Length: 317
Image 1 (cartoon, one colour):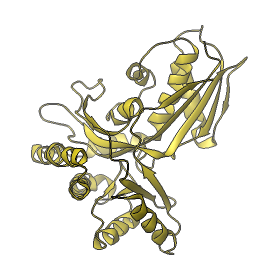
Image 2 (tube, rainbow, N blue to C red):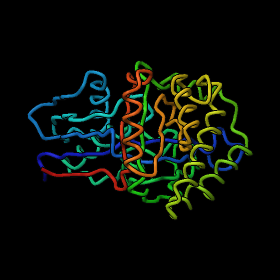
Image 3 (tube, helix red, strand yellow):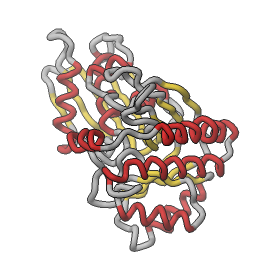
Image 4 (cartoon, helix red, strand yellow):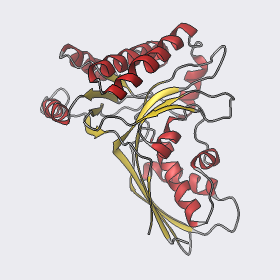
């Protein structure tokens, strides 16, 4: 029985759902990618009493997840240390990755063999999208086929390794966050159902363009498809987020990148982060240098990331 478990995972990008309030068939679904940065690292160890070392912004969430994980009084007290954390409410799926990391480590310490999906239910994840749960388990480029029942976790329809050389810039404006909590719930309530036409178009972009482009390593085709997907999803969500992008600054930047011929740009989840795809690391580094040296964008967070084509790393210490 280990006395300490370390879990390391990446961030989840959610390019958009495939349905919302579907008239027929499965609901939600979506397409996304696990990336290497930003990352989450949690160390959980047995202890004489419960202690938490974590940033103030996520301290209460860590305590809640710890309490949700305990299925009996026999579970040992533990020390939870959040060594690295993913920014919350920026479109990175940080809540799911943090929750699953803590739940997995605590289960290992207490000889609970529950799988990732059972643990996700225990800590209340996957209410709409299952991408972060599948991403924690498998990594890579993921297609969530939607929920068959309101309380189910969206099924994994496809999973591909993403080309190692394709590189992303993840760009967030300073001082803003995407929708979360009750505001997010209300936004989904207020939105009209996504039309079957939109769902069909999005499914075609995924099935007949994105997935083949990844398999054939055709970057231009993938970039065109992901840009079109992001635009179509953004138009649907514009009543809730104020436009195709939730941040006007990121909308302006996307326009600028488009004029420069960078076609693979889309918002992740509710934003405000946008993801810009590049065929090589060198091109991403060059654009990173240009943006960080431009006073217009100097206050933005700009992260260079690659795909994480594996599940979370679990190390028993």
